[in-house]
Image 1 (spheres, rainbow, N blue to C red):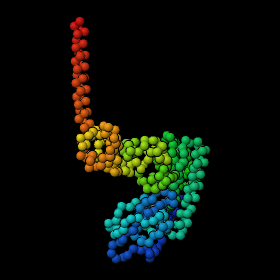
Image 2 (cartoon, helix red, strand yellow):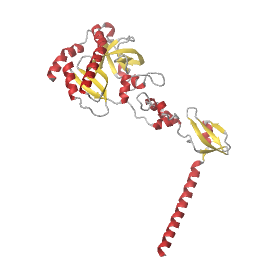
Image 3 (cartoon, one colour):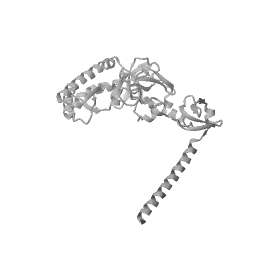
Image 4 (cartoon, rainbow, N blue to C red):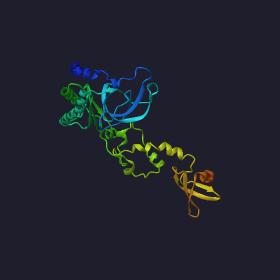
Length: 336
């Protein structure tokens, strides 16, 4: 069956791999070092943006180009210019390389691609309902040359989809791959708007998901309300990681909240850190609030550490006395 499938898609893939004659405006200069230009591209109208390099200087927004990928050339749409230019020998880091402009036939095939993916989605959903599989189909991705179709789904546990794959292979006569994803990747594919009013970070530019902890929200003095620090996926916001390192570096050397400091002969208790302004909000012994600038709290003396040491010595001494008394009582009871 695999040989038949490969034979079925071979003419189409060979056709997609053929390059038309290079146009005069796409041909780089013969002499000297080639100059690279950088563009923002998307493989679908809604999805992540990537940075791609090209030797074509005049690609306009909305143009369709062919991009080199691991499985062959794929069409992508130009969404604008990216920062940077110069010789290709010292080019910046990019995700893809633009090969050429798309032909009219490739533009027509690209326009039909979302329709084919929607049809594959409906067919797969019917088979899932027929087999009563505990899975939720999220998205279907079809390669431009028709060599593979990827079905993304979510499930609470592992799913035996072998029978489903057999039916899909018989239906589409091509390679079929099932990929189970998590809730973060599901939100990345479906897209949406965040609480900030902008497109979700995971949909627009995030390439990987970093671990997010509640400690990051605390470091940025954010309200620990789950509804305010959680995203559409009901997980902690990915943007909590963006400024966490900056807040942590700005707070280095600042007295922590609750610490007692001595400044100009008076004691103050730190009630709030304001790292963006570089200031501390403190309360004096008389209850008066005072805003300490950076040059002021750096000259202040932290006195709470000394008090803690004294308290520790007192507690250790009381413990030793208690142990001695307990030993004396136990010894007197034994002799009696």
